[in-house]
Amino acid sequence: MGNGLEILPKTVRDILKVNNDEILRLCKSGNVPLKKNEKGLTYFTTDDVKTLKRLQDLQNQATMQEEKSVQLKNGLKKTPSKHQEAAPQLPAEQKRADETLALLKQITGAVKNIETGVYDKFANLLDEKLESKLEEKLGGIDAVIMDLVRCKTEAEDMRKKLAQNDKEIYALKNELSCYKKFAGNIYIKKQAEKLFDF
Image (cartoon, rainbow, N blue to C red; front, top):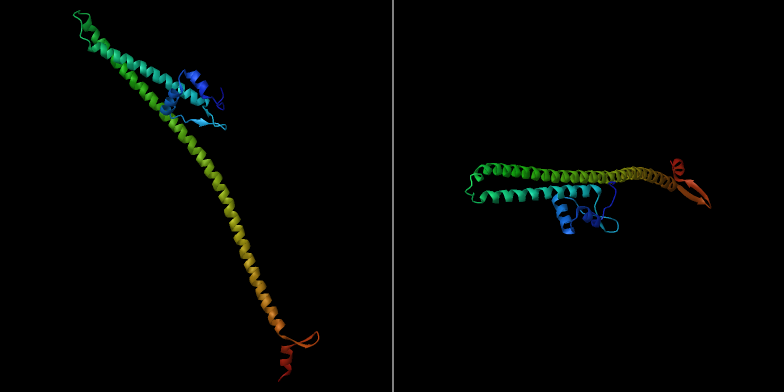
């Protein structure tokens, strides 16, 4: 099976031989997020199903060991019979009970390790997705900043050109004001008149 497959809950129920409530409980204990496809249907990936199966197996083993431990403890609490054979069996049963408790602790540790592994995997995946989205957004901001800098430079150039044009217009107006209409379309420069006025 490929990791790109979308496995529907009905198939997961058939694989694990459990109902929806049990699937939800396994998802919660294994931190397996429920995913929705484009049609809005819940689905699981191959990795999700493998994780759920491992959790189910571990929980079944833990339940069996707990039951055995309870049976052993109940067996130890019974009053020993008057037969002398019962007395030598108590240390052996106690040893089995201790082994069972040790095994239960190992299973609990394994389940916690799996939960931690799933959590770490999810956290790393989330970090990678957030980092790529952030880089994508910042890349767009860089382009906008470059456009703003270019626009600011163009605006500054336009201001300089406007200032130069204003100076030229002022100079031309001054030049134009020096001319006085003489007759028709003939103009005389005022400064020329002043030159002759001594």
